[in-house]
Image 1 (cartoon, rainbow, N blue to C red):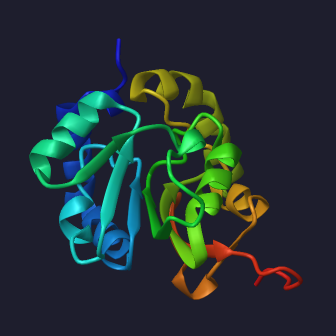
Image 2 (tube, rainbow, N blue to C red; image 1 turned 90 degrees about the vertical axis):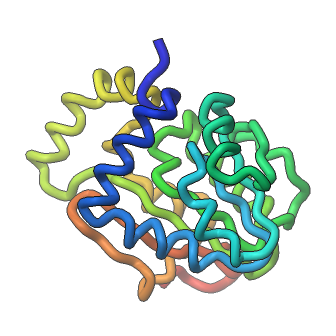
Length: 201
C-alpha cells in the first residue's frame, strides 16, 4: 500500500487544508523568491510550479511517477524529472536556486541529499527550504518520537522528528538568519554554501 505522499489526490487534499490554515503564504515565499535556473526538489504534485514560472528555467523533480503525472496536469509545460534527492541527475553547478518544501522529512538519506543539493548549486546559489522539524518542547518531542514509526508508514516516508536545521548546517550550508522564520514545529529559511574560512552566522 502506498502512503499518503504517493497518492496524489490525498496528498493534494492534505496540502489544500494546510494552505487554508496559512501555509499558502509560506509556499508563495518559498517559490517566489527563486531566481535563475531553479530546481523544485520533491515537487510532489507541482503545487509550487505556478509561482515558479517567473524564476527562469525550472526543472521539477520527484521520485513518485504518480505525483509527477499530477504535476504534469497542473503544469503541462513543466520540465519534469523522476529521481531521488540522493542521486540528482544534473551536472555540478547547474542551478542558481534549489526549492525544497517539506521534502527532507521524507528523504531516506538527508545528508546525502543535501550533499547533492550542494553539488548542483552554482557559486552563490541558494537553497530555499520549508520543513517541519523536531519540537523544542521535550514533551512534544517525546510524542513525535512515539508516533513517528506509525506516521512514517501512513504518510509514505515522512519523519516529523528530524533536526533538519542541524543537518543543513552539517552539510556545509549556512542559514541566512534574517530569512529564518519559526511557527511551532514549522521552519523556513534560505541557506547558502559556507564560505571557506568564515565561521557560521
